[in-house]
Image (cartoon, rainbow, N blue to C red; front, top):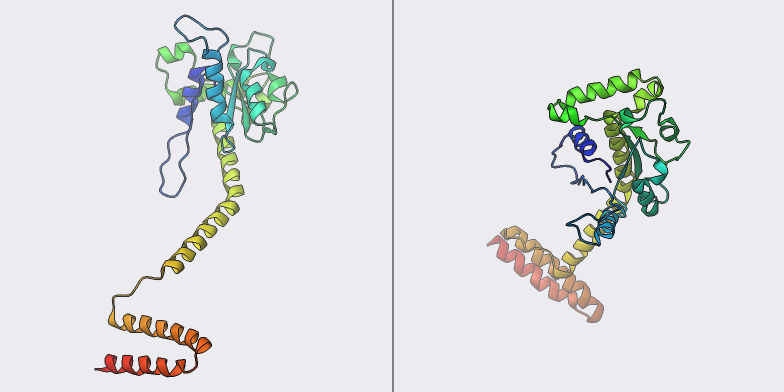
Length: 258
């Protein structure tokens, strides 16, 4: 959920695209910010439509929620945090991201939020500073913007002591570590599901019968196995089954030797 599209766009550059044949597909979805007032040209249901759409994504148990709030607004009024709390009561899937730290009024800071005093989350808050509109108009490079972000936190008199835990790079690492822990936690259940599927398929194959070999020797082996099975059943129900098997056995070996 986003209260500033550009902050999210900049963050996407940090999460560089990775390709592999050995990992599952992941989807990174930029959801629209909430709206309070219906403007001209929008349907009357736009407020409810947006909330319902956001909810359909973030209520999924495998979804990791980035609840983005602006530092120059009261976090208590954050719609992102409010809705995230509704669908993720324990907070295990929710990461609070605070933007626009460099746009706060002089003499104010967001330490109460970042340090979890005003609103504590299960995971630590992460503050980020992205390109301004002026930087965007000047086509400031993302790497340059990241250097400025690091410099801002390193030299900040308020949050300098938290510099190692702030910034887009830190957020990316935090999310990667969380995703890894989630995957490890799911491995046992995934393994059990795979083993169960294998057992069901093998049972179905046994029901339909195993493939018949094409080699002459394998044909003979398959026939003898069938004869053994027939012999066992025949001995149980009728006497003299071993004699019938002997006929098949002698005949097959004579044919094979010719």
